[in-house]
Amino acid sequence: MIKIDTNMVIYAMDKDNKEAARAKSGDRIRFETLDCFSCEVTSEDQELSGVDFDKVNPATGPLFVEGAMPGDVLKVTIEKIEVVDQGLSMVEKGLGRLGDKIDMPKARMVDVKGDRAYFRGLEFPLNKMVGVIGTAPAGEAIPTGAPHDHGGNMDCTQVKEGAILYLPVNVEGALLALGDLHAAMGDGEVGGCALEINGAVELKVEVVKDFAYKTPMIDVDNKYITIGSRKSIDEASDLALANMADLIMKKTDLDFYDTNMLMTMAVDLISCQVVNPNMTMRAEISKDIFK
Image: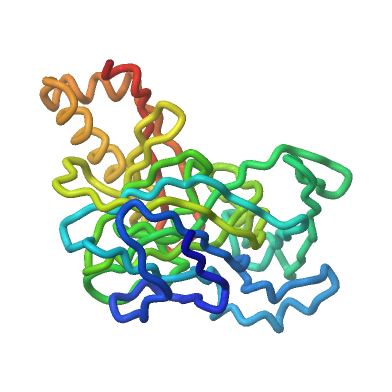
C-alpha cells in the first residue's frame, strides 16, 4: 500500500502542486491527515488568538494517478477511516450560523473511545467522515477550505467508510488530496466546527473513462447522491437537484417532467454544510428504484 504522511500537505487544490506520490489505477493508498487546525490546538486553555488561521483545513497529498486525463473521472473507494482518541471542537465569533451570538473563542477537547464520543458529561455515536477531498481544478487554485465542482471542503457526512466517491479529473494525474477528518458531525455543520480530529484514510483509486454522470457524486448505503456547492444554499440546492435529474433521466426512460415528479416523491434534499465559503447540498435517491 502506498503511504502519504503529514509531511506532505497543501492548503489549496492547485494544478501546480508538486505530487506527493504516484499511483496506478486500482492501487490502494493510505493518507495520514492533520486535523483542520493543523494540530495547533492542543488544550482548552490555549490562547486561540494565536492559532494561524491561514493553516486551516490542510489536505494531505496530492496523489498523481497515472492514466488519469482531463475529462476522465476518478473513482475513490473509502475503505477505512482511523481517528485518534481525542479531538476538539470550538466556537468563534462569526463562525457558523449562530456565530453572531459568540463573544469570544472557546475550545473543548472531546474524548473518543471505540465508536463513541464523550463531551461534557454526554456521549453520542461517532460518524467518521472525510471533510475535505478533491482533485485539482483546471483553472485558478481553490483553497482547501472551499468546496466547488472539484470536491474540496464539502463536509459531507456520506463521504465515509464504504462510500464510493466520483470526482472529476481536470488535469493530468487528477492530483487527489484529502484531510479535515471528523469523528462526528451533524448534517449542516451548523457551528462551523465539528469533532475535528487527525487520523488516516485508506482508499482505492480507479480511473473511469466515459463516465455518464455529473460529479461530484457518491454511491453509498444503497443510495446515489449528487452534490452541489455554490455561494448560496439556493444555488447549491439547484445544482444538486439538476445533477440528480440528469442521473435519473440517464438511468430511466423518464422525461424531465416525469423526473421532477419522481424527485418530489423519492428524492431527499439534505444540507452537507452551510458555513464554508460555498454552501454544499446533496440530493439522495434509493438505488432500489432503478432495479
